[in-house]
Length: 165
Image 1 (cartoon, rainbow, N blue to C red):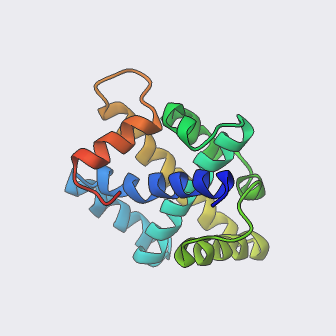
Image 2: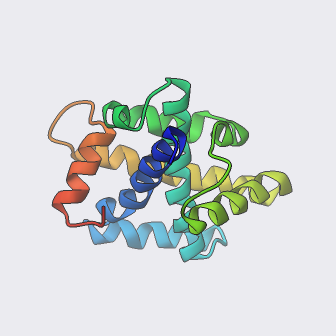
C-alpha cells in the first residue's frame, strides 16, 4: 500500500464517520433527509455522496499541504469545511489514487465524476451536497470542547462513540 493509498483510506474513514457523529442529535438526520428529498436526491445516495465529499475535501487539503496520512490528524475541520464549498469540483479529484482498495469508494468517485461531467442539475446537486457537508463539519466543530478541532479530534470522537475504525 502506498502513502497515497493510506492517506486516501484515512480521508475516506473521516468521511464515513462525519454523519453518524452529527446524527447523535437525531433531528439533524431528519432535517438532512428532508433537504435531500426536497432536492430530489435519493437519501442513501445523497448521504454516500456527502461522505465521499468529506473524504475528497479532506484529501484535497491534505494533498495541497503535502500532509502524510499521520499528519491528517492535525488538519483543522474548518479547512476541510472551507474546501467543501471553496474548491471547484475537479480540484477535489486532483491527487486521488489510481485504484481504490474499497470498491465502494471507487464507485462513489465515479458517480461524483459523472455528476461533474453531466453538469446542469447534477452540478447543482453537488453544490447542495457540499453545503450540507460544510454544515455537518461546522456542527461538529461547534460541539468540540476545544477551539479549532482537527480531524484527529473527530477520529477520537468516532472511536469513543464506537463507530467502526
